[in-house]
Amino acid sequence: MTAFTLSRLGGLMSKGRLRPAAGLAVLSLCSLPFAPAHALSCLPHDVARTYEQAAQSDDTYIVVHGTLTFDESRLPKTDWQNQQKTPPNTLIPARLEGQALTRKGFVAPFTRPITFNVQCLGPWCASAESGTPYLAFLRRTDGQSGAGTSGSSDTGNSYQLDINACGGMGFAEPSEQALETVVQCFRGGPCKPQHPRP
Image 1 (cartoon, one colour):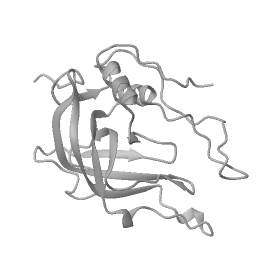
Image 2 (image 1 turned 90 degrees about the horizontal axis):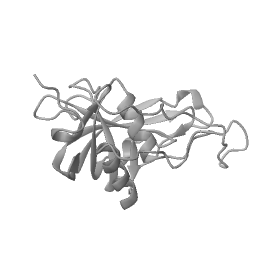
Image 3 (image 1 turned 180 degrees about the horizontal axis):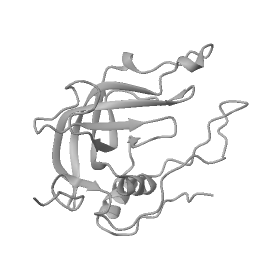
């Protein structure tokens, strides 16, 4: 059986089937201004770097541009008086409707339930709004999403979008430049992060 890759149907990609890419996105030492001490530090959220992270992963990803809808009441909330109770992962049934990436661009219809994993790094949690357009790097979980059948497609595959306080694998309201960058990366063109690691 021929495995689908990012250059074939559905925009799938997995490790070893793309051109070599640079390392994973990591936390930097550039402190954000919203906390006086022990502040969360992140590299700027970068489409090319996220593409490289997905390409280097042992997991399989598809890239989708579409509208994400979910129940906002299920988003995690930080109890600043009891921070250790903040869950590291909150799995929310969601729906993504848009187009998956192919060599011709974002043209393959994609409308299905997914699992939306809103992650917290200590007390710092990702935020999101239902109905927002997203550039989403969806990780295939083959039915093992942990959110019941809500993230499963009719093919038996499940897809999960992981976001965190540093951005994660999703870009809310992506610019045209961001969309063009990921298409260029996929086609084997220049794929250099705008903000290299220090």
